[in-house]
Image (cartoon, rainbow, N blue to C red; front, side, top):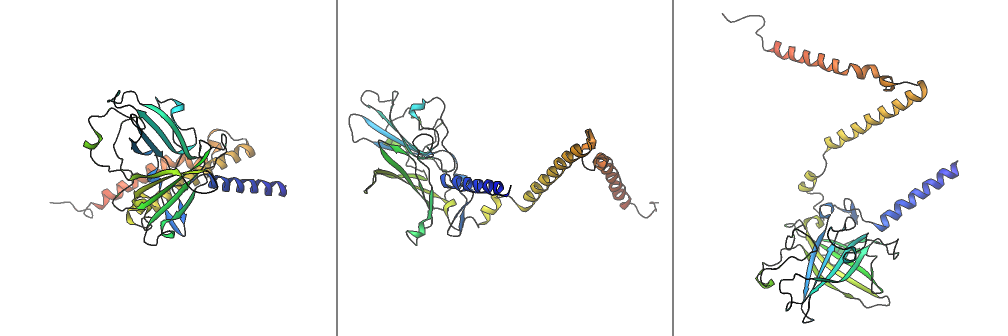
Length: 316
């Protein structure tokens, strides 16, 4: 029996470490004794890169990232035009011919690049996240560097290196241009040069192969956000956004009462064969609660009403 229990504990312990190795907990990131909460950056974030170096066609690559969970498939887009399930960082290359299609009504998806994610069931690639402080590279920098792996494209391994740089004036959720449907190019009105400059906190740096024995392509992104500041977790703003003491107290009390009632009911059923109200522990007391509350309320009301009198004397 002891051996079985020991084996079960070992398996659970191994699974917990495996889960931590293939994922990233945005709510609780701790590096070198510093804690970070990146949960506010959850969801899809995209940045696009325009390429006119291969005329007559023009190309646009949209890099999309979700640090906290796999990217969800978009409705209305073919599966082959999206990255596979489990992808955290994805690149979609689109092309069009401005001479024949100035309004970009017939944009073609050329390539889909799964840069990072958990692909154990398909290619065997693992996210294997690595988080480090930017101060480890430059003592004057403030922020985090997150490396995500797992992708494979054109027989080359893929990696995303995302530098989250401390910017106390930005949340990191500022988008370059808000669109109703992500990852789909809408019709353009005029030239790109006439549009306002980028206000996106997520910025493309580079993408391409790196030197070394291993065939590897690396996508580099910069992301400006206050949530990457080392002192943000201890700031008043962060504490206000978190759960307070009373919230935790109420939650723990509720769970404790629920556990007590469930366990007591199960015990009464198995030991005494109880049914109905008799299942509940201290069922008589629970049934009397409405009456007790009613009596208590009446006494409080009488006390308040009596406190307003003048000792039995009335005005003449």
